[in-house]
Length: 167
Image 1 (cartoon, helix red, strand yellow):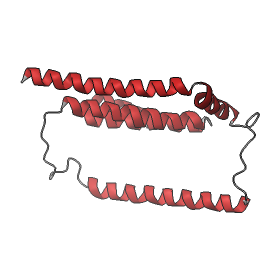
Image 2: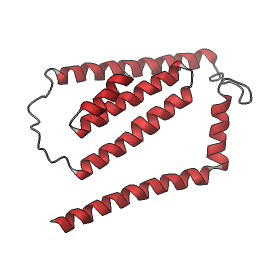
Image 3: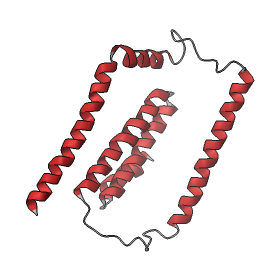
């Protein structure tokens, strides 16, 4: 999965397709983290990299403009839409199963989930990291997010001025 995505990033000519191949690669890395029982890193990999960073890449790609007009009536891959519908139905089924299974576990235990002790359980590092980020370093965490938003807005403004000057 990782190798196919990495080759797709290099081989694809269309930048949006290359960015989607990058998503495949990042999901593959998240699967490796899950296999090594590093669930927090897998979640961060999906949320931060596959979610936020690739969306930022796509935003910049679209902002710079891929100046090719594509005909939406022609499909580049035959059967793409039926496969997308099947994949969507499968993902909805997995989501419903996870919700029902979670409710079943919650109801069996009565008072809630039996979470590990935050001092010596298997998720102790995750709990300590969360407590640290959202208590001691919350200001730095929020300032970083504001700086990222300012950087994106600045990029948009610089690009718009450059285009206006060029026209």
